Image 1 (spheres, each protein chain N blue to C red):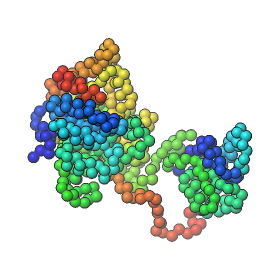
Image 2 (image 1 turned 90 degrees about the vertical axis):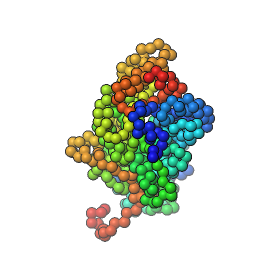
Image 3 (image 1 turned 45 degrees about the vertical axis):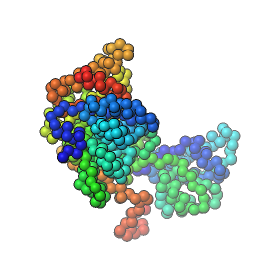
Image 4 (image 1 turned 180 degrees about the horizontal axis):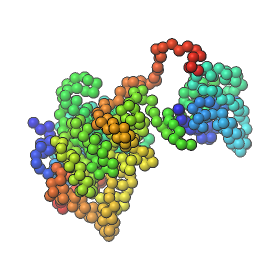
Length: 293
Length: 227
Protein backbone atom coordinates (compact mmCIF):
# COMPACT_ATOMS: atom_id res chain seq x y z
CA UNK A 1 0.00 0.00 0.00
CA UNK A 2 1.28 3.43 -0.85
CA UNK A 3 2.53 5.49 2.04
CA UNK A 4 0.89 8.63 0.65
CA UNK A 5 -1.20 9.94 -2.21
CA UNK A 6 1.94 11.42 -3.67
CA UNK A 7 3.78 8.10 -3.50
CA UNK A 8 0.90 6.55 -5.40
CA UNK A 9 1.34 9.17 -8.10
CA UNK A 10 5.09 8.58 -8.13
CA UNK A 11 4.47 5.00 -9.12
CA UNK A 12 2.19 6.03 -11.97
CA UNK A 13 3.34 7.12 -15.40
CA UNK A 14 1.84 10.59 -14.98
CA UNK A 15 3.86 13.74 -15.51
CA UNK A 16 4.12 15.09 -11.98
CA UNK A 17 3.81 18.69 -10.93
CA UNK A 18 4.76 19.95 -7.50
CA UNK A 19 5.24 23.47 -6.26
CA UNK A 20 6.28 25.16 -3.08
CA UNK A 21 4.69 27.62 -0.69
CA UNK A 22 6.87 29.67 1.61
CA UNK A 23 5.47 30.26 5.10
CA UNK A 24 5.04 33.83 6.32
CA UNK A 25 7.38 35.86 8.45
CA UNK A 26 4.94 36.14 11.31
CA UNK A 27 1.82 34.54 12.69
CA UNK A 28 -0.59 35.66 9.96
CA UNK A 29 -1.14 32.60 7.79
CA UNK A 30 -3.98 34.05 5.69
CA UNK A 31 -1.89 34.57 2.57
CA UNK A 32 -0.28 31.14 2.84
CA UNK A 33 -3.70 29.52 3.19
CA UNK A 34 -4.86 31.50 0.17
CA UNK A 35 -1.90 30.17 -1.85
CA UNK A 36 -2.56 26.63 -0.64
CA UNK A 37 -6.23 26.85 -1.66
CA UNK A 38 -5.26 28.23 -5.03
CA UNK A 39 -2.73 25.47 -5.73
CA UNK A 40 -3.91 22.32 -3.97
CA UNK A 41 -6.04 21.01 -6.82
CA UNK A 42 -3.70 22.11 -9.57
CA UNK A 43 -0.57 20.24 -8.45
CA UNK A 44 0.28 16.76 -7.16
CA UNK A 45 1.84 18.05 -3.96
CA UNK A 46 2.85 21.26 -2.24
CA UNK A 47 6.25 21.62 -0.57
CA UNK A 48 6.41 23.81 2.50
CA UNK A 49 9.85 25.30 2.87
CA UNK A 50 11.87 25.13 6.10
CA UNK A 51 13.27 28.59 6.89
CA UNK A 52 14.23 28.92 3.24
CA UNK A 53 17.60 30.64 2.69
CA UNK A 54 18.04 30.47 6.49
CA UNK A 55 15.46 33.21 6.94
CA UNK A 56 13.35 32.61 10.07
CA UNK A 57 9.70 31.97 9.26
CA UNK A 58 6.57 30.13 10.35
CA UNK A 59 7.53 26.43 10.51
CA UNK A 60 7.30 23.96 7.64
CA UNK A 61 5.45 21.49 9.87
CA UNK A 62 2.81 24.13 10.61
CA UNK A 63 2.50 24.88 6.91
CA UNK A 64 2.06 21.18 6.13
CA UNK A 65 -0.71 20.91 8.72
CA UNK A 66 -2.47 23.77 6.96
CA UNK A 67 -2.10 21.97 3.61
CA UNK A 68 -3.69 18.89 5.20
CA UNK A 69 -6.50 20.99 6.71
CA UNK A 70 -7.25 22.49 3.31
CA UNK A 71 -7.34 19.04 1.70
CA UNK A 72 -4.02 19.22 -0.12
CA UNK A 73 -1.03 16.88 -0.29
CA UNK A 74 1.97 18.32 1.57
CA UNK A 75 5.67 17.61 1.22
CA UNK A 76 7.49 18.51 4.42
CA UNK A 77 10.90 20.06 3.84
CA UNK A 78 13.26 19.26 6.71
CA UNK A 79 16.74 20.69 6.94
CA UNK A 80 19.52 19.72 9.34
CA UNK A 81 20.51 23.33 9.98
CA UNK A 82 18.35 24.07 13.01
CA UNK A 83 17.70 20.78 14.81
CA UNK A 84 19.84 18.04 16.22
CA UNK A 85 19.01 14.37 15.78
CA UNK A 86 16.58 14.27 18.72
CA UNK A 87 14.54 17.18 17.41
CA UNK A 88 14.54 15.85 13.84
CA UNK A 89 13.32 12.42 14.92
CA UNK A 90 10.59 14.02 17.02
CA UNK A 91 9.48 16.17 14.08
CA UNK A 92 9.37 13.13 11.79
CA UNK A 93 7.26 11.18 14.28
CA UNK A 94 4.95 14.13 14.74
CA UNK A 95 4.63 14.66 10.98
CA UNK A 96 3.69 11.04 10.41
CA UNK A 97 1.16 11.11 13.26
CA UNK A 98 -0.63 13.98 11.50
CA UNK A 99 -0.67 12.30 8.09
CA UNK A 100 2.30 14.20 6.71
CA UNK A 101 4.18 11.35 5.07
CA UNK A 102 6.10 13.01 2.25
CA UNK A 103 9.42 14.40 3.41
CA UNK A 104 12.09 16.21 1.43
CA UNK A 105 15.39 15.64 3.25
CA UNK A 106 17.81 18.54 2.91
CA UNK A 107 21.04 19.59 4.56
CA UNK A 108 19.88 23.21 4.60
CA UNK A 109 21.44 26.49 3.54
CA UNK A 110 24.26 27.98 5.52
CA UNK A 111 23.30 30.22 8.44
CA UNK A 112 25.48 32.93 6.85
CA UNK A 113 23.09 33.52 3.95
CA UNK A 114 20.09 34.18 6.21
CA UNK A 115 18.73 36.79 8.58
CA UNK A 116 20.02 35.29 11.86
CA UNK A 117 23.71 35.23 11.10
CA UNK A 118 24.70 34.96 14.77
CA UNK A 119 22.73 31.74 15.34
CA UNK A 120 24.46 28.45 16.11
CA UNK A 121 24.49 26.24 13.00
CA UNK A 122 23.48 22.71 14.04
CA UNK A 123 24.17 20.31 11.14
CA UNK A 124 24.26 17.36 13.52
CA UNK A 125 23.28 15.34 10.43
CA UNK A 126 23.53 15.87 6.68
CA UNK A 127 20.94 15.11 4.02
CA UNK A 128 22.21 11.56 3.39
CA UNK A 129 22.24 10.73 7.08
CA UNK A 130 18.75 12.25 7.45
CA UNK A 131 17.39 9.97 4.72
CA UNK A 132 18.89 6.95 6.49
CA UNK A 133 17.50 8.13 9.80
CA UNK A 134 13.96 8.29 8.37
CA UNK A 135 14.35 4.77 7.00
CA UNK A 136 15.62 3.50 10.34
CA UNK A 137 12.56 4.95 12.09
CA UNK A 138 10.45 2.98 9.64
CA UNK A 139 12.34 -0.13 10.72
CA UNK A 140 11.22 0.56 14.28
CA UNK A 141 14.43 1.92 15.75
CA UNK A 142 15.51 5.39 16.77
CA UNK A 143 19.07 6.59 16.23
CA UNK A 144 20.02 5.43 19.70
CA UNK A 145 19.03 1.89 18.71
CA UNK A 146 15.93 1.92 20.90
CA UNK A 147 12.63 0.32 19.88
CA UNK A 148 9.81 2.62 18.84
CA UNK A 149 6.22 2.23 19.91
CA UNK A 150 4.50 2.58 16.59
CA UNK A 151 6.56 3.07 13.47
CA UNK A 152 6.13 5.76 10.81
CA UNK A 153 6.14 5.28 7.03
CA UNK A 154 7.51 7.93 4.73
CA UNK A 155 7.74 8.77 1.08
CA UNK A 156 11.21 10.31 0.97
CA UNK A 157 12.66 12.85 -1.38
CA UNK A 158 15.92 14.70 -1.74
CA UNK A 159 17.47 17.39 -3.85
CA UNK A 160 20.13 17.34 -6.54
CA UNK A 161 21.92 20.03 -8.56
CA UNK A 162 22.16 18.98 -12.24
CA UNK A 163 23.59 22.36 -13.29
CA UNK A 164 26.36 22.51 -10.69
CA UNK A 165 29.53 23.86 -12.25
CA UNK A 166 31.46 20.89 -10.86
CA UNK A 167 29.07 18.02 -11.32
CA UNK A 168 31.03 14.86 -10.44
CA UNK A 169 30.87 15.09 -6.63
CA UNK A 170 27.19 16.11 -6.88
CA UNK A 171 26.41 12.95 -8.86
CA UNK A 172 28.20 10.81 -6.29
CA UNK A 173 26.14 12.42 -3.56
CA UNK A 174 22.99 11.86 -5.61
CA UNK A 175 23.88 8.18 -5.75
CA UNK A 176 24.43 8.11 -1.98
CA UNK A 177 20.98 9.67 -1.49
CA UNK A 178 19.41 7.00 -3.69
CA UNK A 179 21.17 4.31 -1.66
CA UNK A 180 19.97 5.98 1.54
CA UNK A 181 16.35 5.63 0.46
CA UNK A 182 15.34 8.67 -1.59
CA UNK A 183 12.40 7.84 -3.87
CA UNK A 184 12.08 11.17 -5.64
CA UNK A 185 14.27 14.16 -6.35
CA UNK A 186 13.27 17.77 -6.77
CA UNK A 187 16.21 19.40 -8.49
CA UNK A 188 17.72 22.81 -7.97
CA UNK A 189 16.58 25.35 -10.56
CA UNK A 190 17.07 24.20 -14.15
CA UNK A 191 17.60 26.74 -16.94
CA UNK A 192 19.42 24.68 -19.52
CA UNK A 193 17.60 21.71 -21.01
CA UNK A 194 20.87 20.23 -22.27
CA UNK A 195 22.29 19.89 -18.79
CA UNK A 196 19.05 18.31 -17.58
CA UNK A 197 19.26 15.83 -20.45
CA UNK A 198 22.86 15.02 -19.55
CA UNK A 199 21.86 14.52 -15.94
CA UNK A 200 18.98 12.23 -16.90
CA UNK A 201 21.29 10.06 -19.00
CA UNK A 202 23.09 9.39 -15.74
CA UNK A 203 20.11 9.36 -13.36
CA UNK A 204 17.84 7.11 -15.41
CA UNK A 205 19.83 4.04 -14.29
CA UNK A 206 18.29 4.52 -10.82
CA UNK A 207 14.68 3.67 -9.94
CA UNK A 208 13.83 7.16 -8.69
CA UNK A 209 11.59 9.92 -10.01
CA UNK A 210 13.19 13.20 -11.04
CA UNK A 211 11.21 16.44 -10.90
CA UNK A 212 13.06 19.28 -12.57
CA UNK A 213 13.17 22.45 -10.50
CA UNK A 214 11.68 25.41 -12.34
CA UNK A 215 12.34 28.85 -10.89
CA UNK A 216 10.10 31.67 -12.04
CA UNK A 217 12.26 34.76 -12.40
CA UNK A 218 10.63 38.17 -12.11
CA UNK A 219 13.39 40.34 -13.58
CA UNK A 220 17.01 40.41 -14.73
CA UNK A 221 17.86 42.10 -11.46
CA UNK A 222 16.37 39.21 -9.49
CA UNK A 223 18.31 36.73 -11.62
CA UNK A 224 21.58 38.54 -10.98
CA UNK A 225 20.78 38.81 -7.28
CA UNK A 226 20.06 35.10 -7.06
CA UNK A 227 23.30 34.26 -8.86
CA UNK A 228 25.18 36.31 -6.30
CA UNK A 229 23.30 35.44 -3.14
CA UNK A 230 21.18 32.31 -3.35
CA UNK A 231 23.03 29.04 -2.81
CA UNK A 232 22.85 26.58 -5.69
CA UNK A 233 21.42 28.93 -8.30
CA UNK A 234 23.14 29.56 -11.59
CA UNK A 235 21.02 31.58 -14.03
CA UNK A 236 22.80 31.59 -17.41
CA UNK A 237 23.55 34.88 -19.16
CA UNK A 238 21.18 34.26 -22.08
CA UNK A 239 18.24 34.00 -19.68
CA UNK A 240 19.30 37.22 -17.93
CA UNK A 241 19.57 38.92 -21.33
CA UNK A 242 16.13 37.70 -22.31
CA UNK A 243 14.68 39.15 -19.08
CA UNK A 244 16.61 42.40 -19.51
CA UNK A 245 15.26 42.79 -23.04
CA UNK A 246 11.65 43.40 -22.05
CA UNK A 247 10.13 46.74 -21.10
CA UNK A 248 9.83 47.76 -17.49
CA UNK A 249 7.10 45.95 -15.53
CA UNK A 250 6.97 43.05 -17.99
CA UNK A 251 9.77 41.07 -16.35
CA UNK A 252 7.55 38.64 -14.48
CA UNK A 253 5.54 37.99 -17.64
CA UNK A 254 8.79 37.12 -19.41
CA UNK A 255 9.82 34.95 -16.45
CA UNK A 256 6.56 33.01 -16.70
CA UNK A 257 7.08 32.63 -20.44
CA UNK A 258 10.61 31.24 -19.92
CA UNK A 259 9.41 28.85 -17.20
CA UNK A 260 6.46 27.71 -19.32
CA UNK A 261 8.79 27.07 -22.25
CA UNK A 262 11.04 24.90 -20.06
CA UNK A 263 8.11 22.92 -18.64
CA UNK A 264 6.63 22.38 -22.10
CA UNK A 265 9.91 21.07 -23.48
CA UNK A 266 10.49 18.78 -20.51
CA UNK A 267 6.97 17.40 -20.80
CA UNK A 268 6.79 17.06 -24.57
CA UNK A 269 10.22 15.49 -24.90
CA UNK A 270 9.64 13.36 -21.84
CA UNK A 271 13.02 14.37 -20.41
CA UNK A 272 12.23 13.60 -16.77
CA UNK A 273 9.27 12.60 -14.63
CA UNK A 274 7.87 15.97 -13.73
CA UNK A 275 8.57 19.49 -12.58
CA UNK A 276 8.83 21.27 -9.26
CA UNK A 277 7.85 24.92 -9.60
CA UNK A 278 9.52 27.44 -7.34
CA UNK A 279 7.82 30.79 -7.71
CA UNK A 280 9.85 32.33 -4.85
CA UNK A 281 7.29 34.70 -3.41
CA UNK A 282 5.13 34.85 -6.54
CA UNK A 283 3.00 31.80 -5.74
CA UNK A 284 -0.07 33.50 -7.23
CA UNK A 285 1.30 33.15 -10.78
CA UNK A 286 1.64 29.35 -10.63
CA UNK A 287 -1.87 28.65 -12.00
CA UNK A 288 -1.19 31.00 -14.92
CA UNK A 289 2.16 29.29 -15.52
CA UNK A 290 0.56 25.85 -15.53
CA UNK A 291 -2.02 27.14 -17.99
CA UNK A 292 0.70 28.52 -20.24
CA UNK A 293 2.70 25.29 -20.10
CA UNK B 1 49.15 25.84 16.56
CA UNK B 2 46.58 27.94 18.34
CA UNK B 3 45.79 31.18 16.52
CA UNK B 4 44.42 34.30 18.21
CA UNK B 5 43.91 38.00 17.63
CA UNK B 6 44.72 40.70 20.13
CA UNK B 7 41.65 42.41 21.49
CA UNK B 8 41.09 46.05 20.41
CA UNK B 9 42.91 48.54 22.59
CA UNK B 10 39.62 50.12 23.70
CA UNK B 11 38.37 46.80 25.06
CA UNK B 12 41.68 46.15 26.82
CA UNK B 13 41.51 49.60 28.44
CA UNK B 14 38.03 48.80 29.72
CA UNK B 15 39.21 45.46 31.12
CA UNK B 16 42.10 47.02 33.06
CA UNK B 17 40.18 50.13 34.14
CA UNK B 18 39.42 48.90 37.70
CA UNK B 19 43.11 48.16 38.40
CA UNK B 20 46.23 50.29 38.68
CA UNK B 21 49.23 47.94 38.46
CA UNK B 22 48.91 45.46 35.63
CA UNK B 23 51.23 42.70 34.53
CA UNK B 24 51.17 42.29 30.75
CA UNK B 25 51.98 38.63 30.42
CA UNK B 26 53.05 37.28 27.03
CA UNK B 27 53.34 33.69 25.88
CA UNK B 28 56.39 32.40 24.03
CA UNK B 29 54.68 29.63 22.09
CA UNK B 30 51.64 29.87 19.78
CA UNK B 31 50.87 33.50 20.62
CA UNK B 32 54.39 34.49 19.63
CA UNK B 33 54.17 32.63 16.31
CA UNK B 34 50.77 34.07 15.39
CA UNK B 35 51.83 37.55 16.51
CA UNK B 36 49.02 38.03 19.00
CA UNK B 37 50.80 37.92 22.33
CA UNK B 38 54.56 37.27 22.30
CA UNK B 39 57.31 39.39 23.79
CA UNK B 40 57.16 41.86 20.91
CA UNK B 41 53.39 42.27 21.16
CA UNK B 42 53.61 42.74 24.93
CA UNK B 43 56.05 45.58 24.38
CA UNK B 44 53.92 47.13 21.59
CA UNK B 45 50.81 46.83 23.71
CA UNK B 46 52.47 48.59 26.63
CA UNK B 47 53.50 51.45 24.33
CA UNK B 48 50.02 51.62 22.82
CA UNK B 49 48.38 51.71 26.26
CA UNK B 50 50.83 54.41 27.39
CA UNK B 51 50.06 56.56 24.34
CA UNK B 52 46.31 56.06 24.76
CA UNK B 53 46.48 56.99 28.43
CA UNK B 54 48.64 60.04 27.73
CA UNK B 55 46.14 61.25 25.13
CA UNK B 56 43.24 60.85 27.51
CA UNK B 57 45.22 62.57 30.30
CA UNK B 58 44.72 59.64 32.60
CA UNK B 59 48.11 58.03 33.30
CA UNK B 60 46.96 56.02 36.28
CA UNK B 61 48.29 52.62 35.22
CA UNK B 62 51.67 51.10 35.93
CA UNK B 63 52.60 48.30 33.62
CA UNK B 64 54.97 45.41 34.13
CA UNK B 65 55.98 43.29 31.16
CA UNK B 66 56.93 39.65 31.14
CA UNK B 67 56.77 36.79 28.68
CA UNK B 68 56.95 33.16 29.76
CA UNK B 69 57.97 30.24 27.55
CA UNK B 70 54.38 29.05 27.62
CA UNK B 71 51.45 29.88 29.82
CA UNK B 72 49.66 26.57 29.50
CA UNK B 73 52.16 24.68 31.64
CA UNK B 74 52.19 25.36 35.37
CA UNK B 75 55.94 24.80 35.61
CA UNK B 76 56.61 27.77 33.33
CA UNK B 77 54.44 29.98 35.51
CA UNK B 78 56.54 29.60 38.65
CA UNK B 79 58.74 32.51 37.56
CA UNK B 80 55.66 34.74 37.52
CA UNK B 81 54.98 34.10 41.21
CA UNK B 82 57.49 36.70 42.40
CA UNK B 83 55.80 39.41 40.32
CA UNK B 84 52.35 38.81 41.76
CA UNK B 85 52.80 40.94 44.90
CA UNK B 86 53.78 43.91 42.70
CA UNK B 87 50.56 44.01 40.65
CA UNK B 88 46.82 43.92 41.20
CA UNK B 89 45.81 42.27 37.92
CA UNK B 90 47.31 40.21 35.10
CA UNK B 91 46.44 40.84 31.46
CA UNK B 92 47.34 37.56 29.81
CA UNK B 93 48.21 37.59 26.13
CA UNK B 94 48.10 33.80 26.20
CA UNK B 95 45.36 31.85 24.47
CA UNK B 96 42.24 30.86 26.40
CA UNK B 97 44.18 27.96 27.88
CA UNK B 98 46.97 30.28 29.01
CA UNK B 99 44.55 32.70 30.67
CA UNK B 100 42.92 29.85 32.59
CA UNK B 101 46.22 28.21 33.54
CA UNK B 102 47.42 31.52 34.98
CA UNK B 103 44.12 31.95 36.85
CA UNK B 104 44.35 28.41 38.21
CA UNK B 105 47.97 28.84 39.28
CA UNK B 106 47.34 32.20 40.98
CA UNK B 107 43.92 31.98 42.64
CA UNK B 108 43.98 35.37 44.39
CA UNK B 109 44.63 37.78 41.54
CA UNK B 110 42.29 38.73 38.68
CA UNK B 111 43.42 37.44 35.28
CA UNK B 112 42.08 39.17 32.18
CA UNK B 113 42.17 37.97 28.56
CA UNK B 114 44.11 40.19 26.17
CA UNK B 115 43.44 38.14 23.04
CA UNK B 116 40.49 36.44 21.39
CA UNK B 117 41.50 32.83 20.83
CA UNK B 118 40.28 31.91 17.37
CA UNK B 119 41.24 28.45 16.18
CA UNK B 120 43.80 25.72 15.58
CA UNK B 121 45.41 26.56 12.29
CA UNK B 122 48.44 27.21 10.17
CA UNK B 123 50.16 30.19 8.60
CA UNK B 124 48.95 29.95 4.99
CA UNK B 125 51.28 32.76 4.00
CA UNK B 126 52.90 35.69 5.77
CA UNK B 127 50.20 37.32 7.88
CA UNK B 128 47.44 34.90 6.87
CA UNK B 129 46.31 32.11 9.19
CA UNK B 130 43.77 29.47 8.24
CA UNK B 131 41.80 27.15 10.50
CA UNK B 132 42.57 23.48 9.94
CA UNK B 133 41.47 21.43 12.95
CA UNK B 134 38.31 21.51 15.06
CA UNK B 135 39.78 19.20 17.70
CA UNK B 136 36.71 16.97 17.23
CA UNK B 137 38.36 14.05 18.97
CA UNK B 138 37.50 11.58 16.20
CA UNK B 139 39.92 12.14 13.32
CA UNK B 140 38.74 10.94 9.92
CA UNK B 141 41.37 12.60 7.76
CA UNK B 142 42.38 9.23 6.31
CA UNK B 143 38.95 9.07 4.67
CA UNK B 144 39.01 12.59 3.27
CA UNK B 145 42.44 12.81 1.69
CA UNK B 146 43.93 14.76 4.58
CA UNK B 147 41.43 17.63 4.23
CA UNK B 148 39.06 18.12 7.15
CA UNK B 149 35.39 18.62 6.18
CA UNK B 150 34.41 19.21 9.80
CA UNK B 151 36.68 22.25 9.96
CA UNK B 152 36.76 23.47 6.38
CA UNK B 153 33.15 22.91 5.31
CA UNK B 154 30.99 25.60 6.87
CA UNK B 155 28.35 22.96 7.62
CA UNK B 156 30.85 20.28 8.62
CA UNK B 157 28.97 17.72 6.55
CA UNK B 158 30.43 14.26 5.92
CA UNK B 159 28.88 12.84 2.76
CA UNK B 160 29.94 15.21 0.00
CA UNK B 161 29.32 18.79 -1.06
CA UNK B 162 26.03 20.60 -0.62
CA UNK B 163 24.45 22.21 -3.67
CA UNK B 164 25.61 25.67 -2.66
CA UNK B 165 29.15 25.30 -3.96
CA UNK B 166 29.93 27.55 -6.94
CA UNK B 167 33.26 28.02 -8.75
CA UNK B 168 34.81 25.73 -6.15
CA UNK B 169 33.89 28.18 -3.42
CA UNK B 170 31.58 27.99 -0.40
CA UNK B 171 28.03 29.39 -0.33
CA UNK B 172 28.80 31.02 3.02
CA UNK B 173 31.88 32.88 1.79
CA UNK B 174 32.90 33.36 -1.84
CA UNK B 175 36.57 33.61 -0.84
CA UNK B 176 36.54 30.28 0.94
CA UNK B 177 37.29 27.04 -0.90
CA UNK B 178 34.60 24.36 -0.80
CA UNK B 179 36.19 21.64 1.34
CA UNK B 180 34.39 18.90 -0.57
CA UNK B 181 35.64 20.13 -3.93
CA UNK B 182 39.18 20.05 -2.50
CA UNK B 183 38.58 16.58 -1.09
CA UNK B 184 37.18 15.27 -4.36
CA UNK B 185 40.11 16.62 -6.38
CA UNK B 186 42.71 15.25 -4.01
CA UNK B 187 41.02 11.84 -3.77
CA UNK B 188 40.94 11.79 -7.56
CA UNK B 189 44.65 12.57 -7.72
CA UNK B 190 45.32 9.83 -5.17
CA UNK B 191 43.13 7.32 -7.11
CA UNK B 192 40.94 6.96 -4.05
CA UNK B 193 37.62 8.23 -5.40
CA UNK B 194 35.92 5.15 -3.96
CA UNK B 195 36.05 7.00 -0.65
CA UNK B 196 33.66 9.62 -2.07
CA UNK B 197 31.06 6.88 -2.53
CA UNK B 198 31.24 5.59 1.02
CA UNK B 199 28.52 6.44 3.49
CA UNK B 200 29.83 8.21 6.55
CA UNK B 201 27.52 7.93 9.57
CA UNK B 202 26.69 10.85 11.83
CA UNK B 203 29.43 12.13 14.09
CA UNK B 204 29.78 10.70 17.56
CA UNK B 205 29.63 13.75 19.78
CA UNK B 206 30.05 11.54 22.81
CA UNK B 207 33.79 11.54 22.21
CA UNK B 208 33.76 15.19 23.15
CA UNK B 209 31.88 15.56 26.41
CA UNK B 210 33.03 18.97 27.56
CA UNK B 211 35.41 19.54 29.20
CA UNK B 212 37.57 16.78 27.82
CA UNK B 213 40.39 15.09 29.69
CA UNK B 214 43.11 12.75 28.50
CA UNK B 215 44.88 10.55 31.00
CA UNK B 216 48.00 8.98 29.53
CA UNK B 217 48.39 5.34 30.25
CA UNK B 218 52.19 5.35 30.27
CA UNK B 219 54.49 7.01 32.79
CA UNK B 220 56.30 10.06 31.59
CA UNK B 221 59.54 10.69 33.43
CA UNK B 222 60.43 14.24 34.29
CA UNK B 223 62.98 15.74 31.94
CA UNK B 224 62.67 13.09 29.24
CA UNK B 225 61.56 15.01 26.21
CA UNK B 226 58.33 16.27 27.72
CA UNK B 227 59.48 19.74 28.72
